[in-house]
Image 1 (spheres, rainbow, N blue to C red):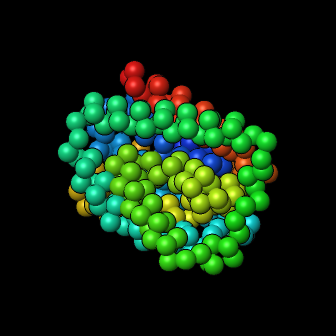
Image 2 (image 1 turned 60 degrees about the horizontal axis):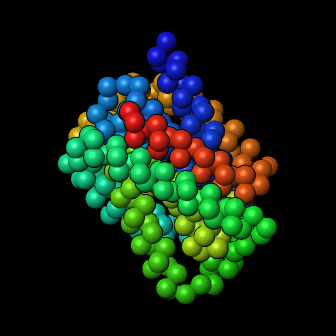
Length: 257
């Protein structure tokens, strides 16, 4: 019965995570911590494995939709590589209660920020901003800035096991003026690269629970494809609100677990 529940969790997390460009790990990891006896390090590593699986199987639909900013995604991924090793090093050295509190506060803070920005700009369109051409025309300064973002995301991704897309999408939208629909697809593309690299250390050290990953993965495979299709049919504002509400709810729940 528990394994069926894991498959359902994987499906829900994957379809929702793909829609908002976050991979679904930010849903899976808190539930693994709440519903199983996995340690934070194992939950994070298992969540990261599922993020990689979700992202790598979802990008094909986004490629067909021509929504991925390849230049931006590759620079982020390159910057994330050193960050993934930093995150893996930190997670095994952090006490469980500290891990949960930091995770919860981060989620709640991000959700509040997204709601504030979304309501503040409710009268403006967020779906027709920078194009792929605009990104390529930017200076070296853009590349350096987006590379530093990659380092941050790689560290967060491996530390929490949640991929970092929940943070990358707001950064691209509000920090660099990228359309929400381009940002979500580019986030999934980046996740497929740097989450795979971030898995190297956890796999070597045996921190991934492969049984949990396998049953969640069944749901992730189906949900990822469905999420990619659904995301192209809903507005950027709706995507932002979905992201904001879910991270706040999960953060509050995790804080009192």
